[in-house]
Image (tube, rainbow, N blue to C red; front, side, top):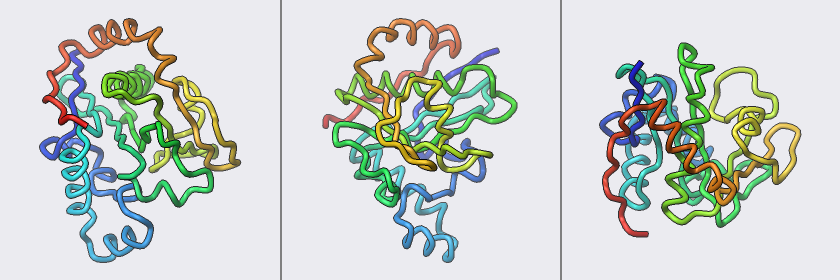
Length: 205
């Protein structure tokens, strides 16, 4: 079974699950998001957001393929690019962290460790770019796929709660702590994903 992981771009945005490719829950503030939904422009707003982040900051997502079929994705960016993050009771994201925005593995591919590999790949990318941590708003009452990641899943892949909340705890993964398993990650990526496609050079920060 061939697996590969590639950066998210406008070219492969259509490979995200249908409900995610035009969702702007995170990318716009609540008022602008509602206006985009009412106007039917969410797909254009999503493309504009990804384009802006790619140009200003660099790679902001990964898509995993299994036998060339899209199997899941993850999206991340500094909190300044994520207007919705300020609407949470446990905000703000720490200034030294990048926000793990959202992610999803299709049901047919769940239980294969792809979620963990996606998070580890984000950690590897951010370590290389000089960041200290990644944070996320978890959903402590998660029942079905939505824009927030389940808190239990974040705990399972190494996050720790830094601000408690009955519904939306803010959680953090210290990237320094991942140094000990960095080599294991690279071996796992080689084993699980096969040849990882070369990434384009990132713009200097």
